Image (cartoon, rainbow, N blue to C red; front, side):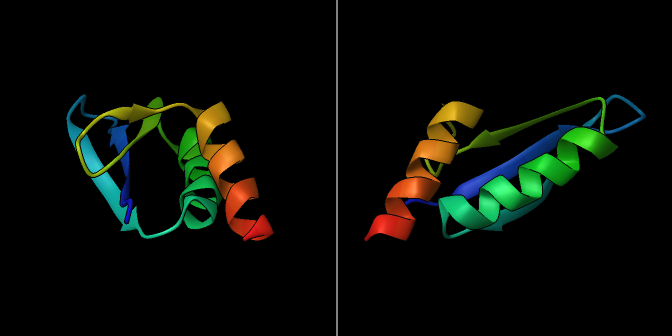
Length: 66
């Protein structure tokens, strides 16, 4: 099972974790908000590897098809 973590750089320059999610669909919804609210935001998985927005959207589509 994958776990998605939304990370961001706060206005003070520190990295913060905004939340963790069990599905790509949940993570995709929250990364969109984070990208509008923070200077930089990104998604990592349970192994702390970056998940691109394109990959996240593909995974979210796969979840809907299952």
